[in-house]
Image 1 (cartoon, rainbow, N blue to C red):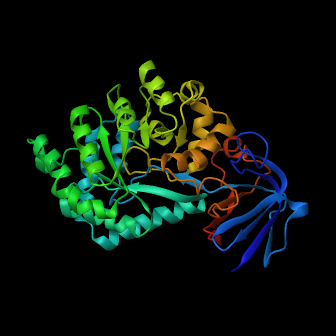
Image 2: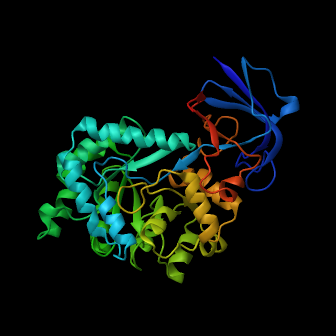
Image 3: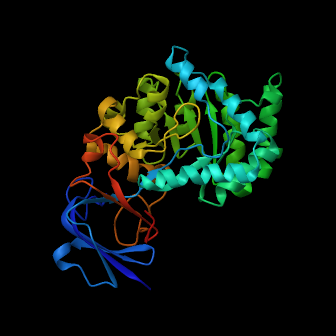
Length: 391
């Protein structure tokens, strides 16, 4: 058993209102004691118990490690040409995914894993300590299963997304592809996954197809989450609430009925907003203010993928959410930590409280507000994951 005391913390975000001020549970002049991989004690620095080792935060801010609850990291290639064309005036559609499918199918397992690890290290340097990632760039039984197997070696939050788009191999038989996704492919993929997801959108899967896929996944023991209402109004949000999905992700185009449904399901279904996608596609921003004021639970995530949101930076997403989506700095940080944990139905991450996993980020700043106040600046100067200093 090893203990570490992190002391002289100028401002500590705990996300536990019982420990400090407001929803963020803010503590000033604080300390944390880590025992092995867990938080053992939180409180004023002046009363901190002794520990085997001491780390001096030198008056800087400490926050929970970011919880990135939506990413697509098992892929090969990139879509630079597509991005360049889009920035020159071409609109985004779901069809560009096929480019990544071709590159991913052609890659070896070692190449896919190396690319995954590169992005994980990149995200960790920016304070991310928990991440979810999906399949969806293979769209064959063998390629989807290997994507999930590779992902499962590096995170417990793995999502089966065979229903990303209809496979090019089934372009003339979408019903046959739904049968594959809910049959042989699901059987091969379920052992590696915790979640099942579907891109419910024009150009991908309609509401009936999405319900069939999610229901089959749930019957196989997977928990639903939904790509919902990204490119247009559609049935995705209502379907997510109906099926008690853990999250409805994107939530860019919402009716009043959608907002009301998410508010009423706030304890079950999280509205996960992905501002990197809107930034990279010059699309309409999600209205976080509308959702929060209605009472919905909101998470922020990167949606890191090679097509529509090629960023692994949670601080960048926080800055976008504050600048363009109506969130306060406090709300954005909560959504990027505790909100992401809610979207993954986790209580052991996204908080700094006794018994939680010791996932922490030290900011080279006196306050978490600097994450939005100083956009683009690499403020994360140290990261602890499961009690180990990893950056």
